[in-house]
Image 1 (cartoon, rainbow, N blue to C red):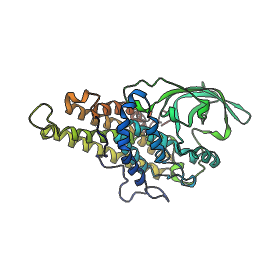
Image 2: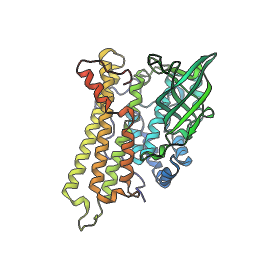
Image 3: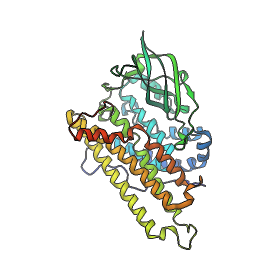
Image 4: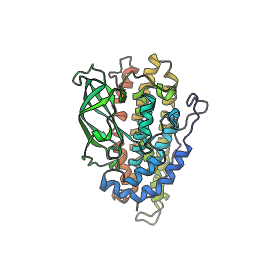
Length: 402
């Protein structure tokens, strides 16, 4: 049996003393953290089905939705908690420490609840009237949006639709001229009834996320269900909705690899009580003690970098200019560094555990696969180092999407 639950072993993503967390919003999230821990036994009981079904079992998804874990960034004006970036990341990290696939879907689903800050209130209220509303998003491809009376005719196929099987709505990128890089990108929101899910999620990590390809063919998307990808105007006053969307999107999943690594430390500490084929317990070995100490230091340093980067992004948002450009680059830099560090931490622990870590019954085996998969996301790509390096050298960022 795998471990039934994990507590986050490292310091949570908490802003430094004196920092401005969110203008006009206290740093909440305690109820959601309690909900994550309360659901840990249910998740453990269904975990084997994550692999066989390649998605979350309905009972697990429903429990997460009923706990409000897919609407963390829904505006308060629309009945949501509107958590600060720091509180949001703590919840994602805690969920990922329990299980990587669960944390990944909490980050993705709750991150998309931020659309409440951009679409008309009546539209968002209608969508989120369903207590189990979940918006699956995909930005890895660009579809075709043809202008028609009242909206757009949308066609395309998109990969990595995390949570697609349970999604009530989808967010996709499209363009009137998809072959023209200069053509503005649109965020379109087709409903579940218009989407065909392609069952191709056969992977080595995050197997429970059901991140399948999906497609739509010549469907009508009303104009009220579309907004620009870049340069959009928020409909809500909070700082969260004024911050650069691509930067906040990247932040929404940064807690996942860190939570997986934190959970790996907890799993390893439990495993290390055993003797591992010798008379001495694994935890009594000095080299093992040093490894655990080093991994804790690595994660705490990574947390500090992320907190500093987000604090600066929040401060720079309404200032703009070059300061905001550099802050956006630093968020992506911190994300790439966090993913690399979390991967290193998890693999170091698995190596210290020895042969037991290759068994599917070992929590470390799942953690290694999950953290490697999470680190492959474009928001945490090593290309972020190039963007930050170019700016530090006085060059342009080399890309508009960072």
